[in-house]
Length: 221
Length: 256
Image (cartoon, rainbow over all chains, first blue to last red; front, top):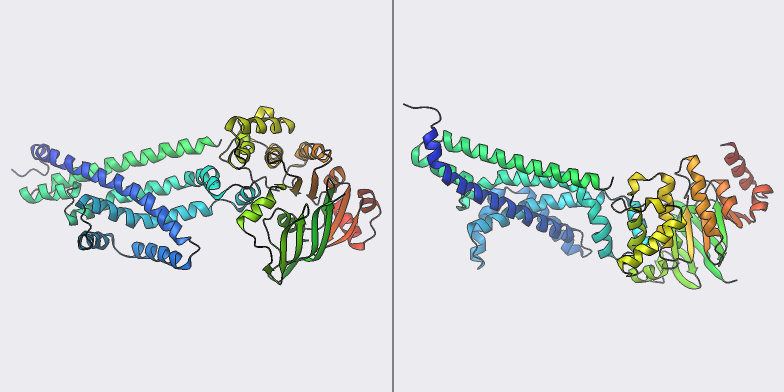
C-alpha cells in the first residue's frame, strides 16, 4: 500500500516541522530587522564625505550583492570562530541574512531618499532645520511610506532564503523537512507541508504589508 | 535708511551660462521691491543667493550690513559653513513657486514645525504661534488639513505663514502666484499686500505677473541677461518705460 500522501505520517512529523517553522520565523524576523539596521549603516558609509569610507561602503554593498548568500553564510560560519567570535548557528544565520539583504535595503533607502523633491530641501534649509530635525520630522516620515512595498518584498524573499541556513545546521523548516524525509524515505509529505508553511507565512506577510500601506497611504489625505 | 540687502559686483554662472553679471543691487530696510523680467534672466537665482541656498562666484552680498557671501575667482573669502549660513538665514524667509509644504504635516504642523524644532518653543507655544499666523492668512478653519487636501492658493498661504513663523526681516517671494489658477491669485495677493503694509518688513518679489508687482511694490526693477536694465517706481516702469527691452517685455506680457 503506497498512497501518495499519508495523513498519519503527516500528523507524525507535524510537531517537528512546526518547530522548524518557528526557527524559520525567528531567523526571518531577526534577519529582517538586522537588514534594516545594516542597510542604514551601509547607506551612511556609502554617503560619507570621507572618500575612503564612502568607497568602503559602496564596495561592501557591491560585494554583498554580487556573491551568493550560501558563500556568505559559510564564510561567517567558518571564519568568525577563527576571529574569536563564537555565535549560535541561528545567530550567524541572522547576521548573514541581515548583511546580504542589508545591501539591497541600502539601495531601497537610497531610492527613498532620492525621491524627496529638491523643493523640500529648499524649504528645510530656508527654515533653518538642523540635519537631525530635518530627517527625524520631515524627511524620514516622507521616505518611509514609499519604502514599504520594497521592504515587504525583502521580508518575503528573506523568508524563502532561510533554507540556506540549513547548510550551517540551523534547524529551520527545510532542515526539519529534509530530516523527516531522509529518516523515512518519504519526501512528499514533509515537502508539501513545508511548502504550505512557507506559503502561509508569505501570505500573512503580504497581508501585513497591505495593511501597513493602507494606513500610511491614507495618513496624508 | 540703511541697506537691508546689498549686492556688490556679483557674478554667478552655471557652466557657460552667465546668470548674474557684475550685478549691483541695493534694497533699503522696509522697501518693497518687485523684480520683473523674462524667464532665465537670473531673477530666481538672485533670491536663492539672498536665502543662502546658492553661492556666488565673485563679488559681495550683505544682509543688514553683515556679509553673507564674499567671493573672488570662485573662491569663498567667507567660509560658507552650516553655522554661518544658518545664522544669516535667520534674517530671511522665502516663499516658493511650488509651495514646498511638508506633505506629512498638517497646515498647523507645517507652520509650527520650525518654531518648535528650530527655535525650541514648546509644542503649545509653537502651535499657538502657528494658529495665529494661519488666522492672519485666513485659514483658521484648515488647521488640521494636510497639504494634499488644500487648494494651491490655500497651500501658498500656509507657506507664507510658515515663512513668517520665524519672524524674518526680509521676505522673498519667488513666483509665488505663478503656479496658481488665475482665480486663486487674488487670495494670495491679498495676504502679500497685508504683509507689504508692515513698515519694517523688507520684501523682494520675483514675478512675471505685472499685477503682482503693481500690487506689492514701491519700486520695480526690470532684469534681463543677469543685469538690472531699468529701476524705478511702478508708475515710471509700467507707464513710461525708458529702456527698449523693458518696453518689449511689457508689450509681450500684456499680449499674453
